[in-house]
Length: 110
Length: 114
Image (cartoon, rainbow over all chains, first blue to last red; front, side, top):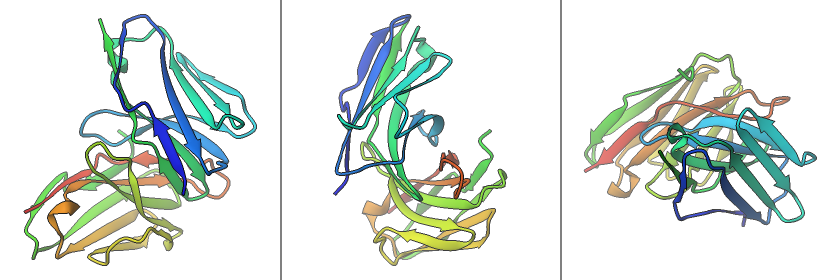
């Protein structure tokens, strides 16, 4: 069965540094990979998607890479701010069936 | 505001009650989803409707019954639930078939079964 792994440990970084979150998957060949942000008690918010034929995507301070050989995506937040503290979810998309990872909790300390 | 609303935001119900969760999307999307999110677990896809037709049903117990009367509204009818059904229930919508299936979520209904 398909499996997605994200860092289960929370990631603590200092303000201004780059946060890097990892998403690994097995037994799947997704057409797209998406990243979402979720704050406590709220629904996830879509951030970025990357297609299977793309290596890298950027949006403001966010950067996503996608290595279909390694079956891995990296999500970077540059110049991190305390407001970036949240849980970040990766999701594999194959048509209507989207499979989410459990998420990585990020804490950015001022 | 995400354009997807859910009511109620909080619900406490006994195991013998019947209740319904409501979701409405104002984004003009053609697909709607129900997810269950339990503590420290990934979102679990429950049901997907596209153009008011159910296209995914992920082995969900029959005590959960979805209804999609039109492309803007989605309901989840609940009856004889178990305590392990306590969770955050999230509704989402997306533009499918030609879109990238990016989903827009509502704020969720926090359900507690006593």
